[in-house]
Image (cartoon, rainbow, N blue to C red):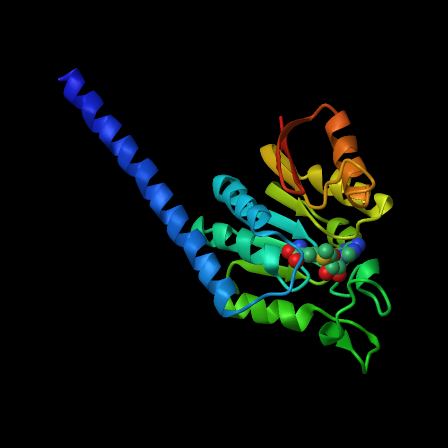
Length: 233
Ligand SMILES: C[S@@+](CC[C@H](N)C(=O)[O-])C[C@H]1O[C@@H](n2cnc3c(N)ncnc32)[C@H](O)[C@@H]1O
């Protein structure tokens, strides 16, 4: 009798793992088809996006996720689809005025995102279009504000925080230290553009991630491409 019970439980477990795997696979296929049909400007490699998606999928049932630095919504689609699948919420913080490197005359300036009347960058219309085409308007809550202002009265515990805002040491440190305080135990801090050596890229995010790690409150998880990941103890 006990053996039959064991067999039933094992097959239930196997079926639920298979079910999650198939669901995850279908959703990641649907992200690919959204991106193929509606190209979204952005700065995230496919392996980084897929890793963000799996991290959020494993975390989102514990509480909402939050990203700093949405730009036109590429990372938002990966995180948002995982949150949608888990009936959770993604808060997407960005002032939509661009980082230093997006301003006129800088390396990553994009004239399509420049508001000539206001004479400033504005990625918010493109971001809203992304939420619409990806059917994420009921899952993603845009917060059009600087990261510091969005955080000053924040009180909601978070299951995952993704940082991809300003890349100076001062801003990256403020974002990583400031937002990681709201992570639940077991929560994930993911940081984009982690380059250990200066010849690979700017050091702000790497130094910020290491400052959080030095607190002793986090464990280091494997890095995927330039996506650094910590888990709160
Ligand atoms: C590198 S882009 C983000 C790319 C995006 N994650 C993607 O997947 O393509 C950086 C974004 O951070 C935003 N940003 C920079 N500093 C910020 C700050 N202090 N507060 C809020 N947003 C900020 C910029 O407006 C810009 O849209």
